[in-house]
Length: 230
Image (cartoon, rainbow, N blue to C red; front, side, top):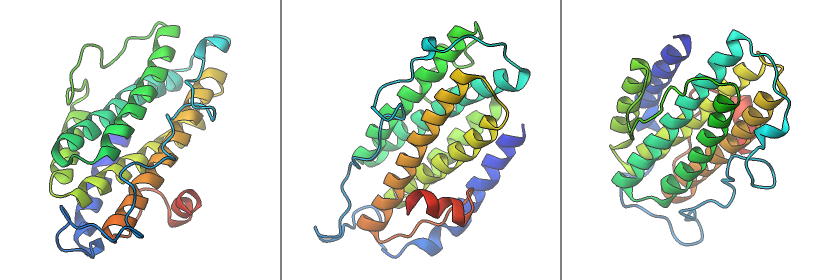
């Protein structure tokens, strides 16, 4: 799958440039002074839902015929959102950073919204009954393991993995949104994209404020990245 190849390339880029972005030698324990230290939890996460903080009501939209692209988009994003949730839960257990627990909760909301689309259109859930770190696709399974290995190196690397995942989500959602005209799919995907922007800001802000690390975008262009993080 093209997107999977793209994810793996992005991961390799992250690993390659990682060392050059770190300005603190002890990344697992270093914290800045109170006036520069970023909060462990960013209030701008959002639930990845509507601006009011609630889930998109999929049933409020009329059912429309699905194209093959739209079916693929729904199933793909269900698994990709699970990837994000599972990586964050695993990295929270390894680092203890609250940001991972909080954003994992948001990713669960993302998964639930996509599941509503799956149920509405009588599709088969690709991750039904699967536990943390278990995936339907071999590529996604391998990516999960690579991301967790990368993020387990230090708190800084864990946060970089988080930022990379959100970049990938934004890029993929932009691609899928160009290929759908269904109102309910667009509403859900635009909501997911808004959540991913919040998460990207949270990860990169914590990297900068607490660890003195300036994150370099791996997937988005510099212009796209700056338009999101400011």
